[in-house]
Length: 330
Image (cartoon, rainbow, N blue to C red; front, side, top):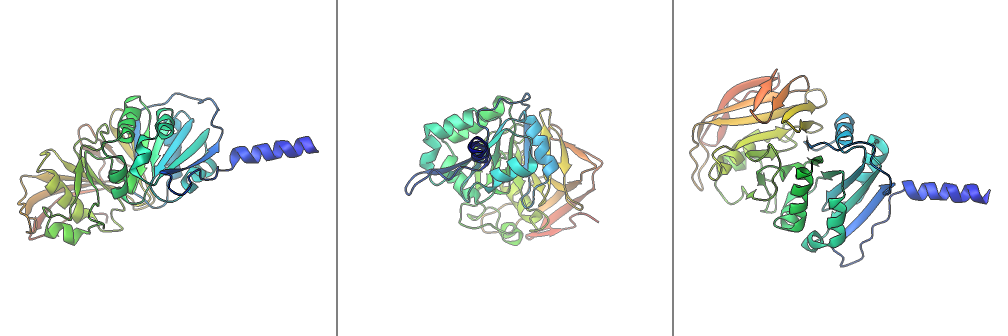
């Protein structure tokens, strides 16, 4: 009986998430669930999972787990605790373990243990929250270099909400202490509230992409157009990619991507035509912006931006800070 009890307790200790290791004043908290010593059961593969926030599509996460070789996942965040790791391990399944690192300060980005965990991750997932914290804690640090190196090693990386917002070559950093809405962004895209960040992460296929999340639900098409307008001051090839809540765009190594989404969920491709009229303190004017929707029965190639079976497509314009004629779901 005692042997059985000890065995049961050992199993519970293995499966239960570890308590946070941080004490007051420490730079991060740590949680783990699963068998950290287990061998990965398959090979890893290069992949990106771009999640729009909200509820997760478990099919997309199982795709991610497969590309992580059903091995060891690391979740990064700057708020909350270890619940996302528990969900991946217990509800999504198909992984050996999940470790969660919750950053409390920039000091953690230089911590040897943190960097060792990232170096050995089979897949890395960046959770939601406030992307300004990710910029403050990770930009120009060993953690940012480790994320780039992880992808170069042919291992998958994903992000949701704030975790997706930072993955583009130009990212909306929300550094002004808020989250700008479409009317405000279109009213002054060159102004200080549109806080774009460059040179942060270097994801394949996203060098000229500005991402946005919670897209249709929070009416963010206008602000993504404004972000792209400002991004083009530095990068004339910049385009926008918005992902709806509950949706996940799963990008293979060759740039081909399929959407996992609930009914009515889409990814939105924003491709401007011509040059915007962009002046500090003035509303945006842009003669033509092509907007294309991708649904689960379609696809997009991020190498060429070719969309197969678009859900909707059309050219809108911006006049005096107003987005006019934008296509969308029927």
